[in-house]
Length: 140
Ligand SMILES: [Zn+2]
Image (cartoon, rainbow, N blue to C red; front, side):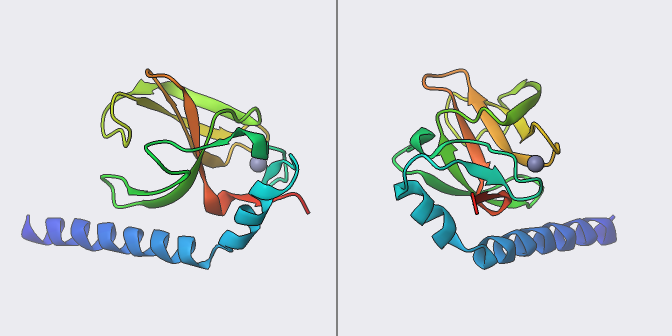
């Protein structure tokens, strides 16, 4: 029993550190510069499909970027967008472990290649997408 929980804790920490490392290695500059350029879409880093437009970038709870960790130890760095037409929303809204008070979340995948890009938050106004910084890039 003790061994099992140690193994679980070890895996949790490893996943957390992998996520942090991934977020640190991602060139934040791409996205920051993108936000001041005229309406060039961000694209899925894996299949290059357009996802949101820069005009859709918004602040939630006082900031555009958020860093969060889920109960499984996955670390996420994401930005908030009022819309993300390239995303496909998966599953039913869940309020468990929501990072935003009063909001339910659903998985948001790339509508083209289906890779996980973030979440769609609903149940309060405004609804919005939280999109993972390291899975999007500026159009080349
Ligand atoms: Zn894609």
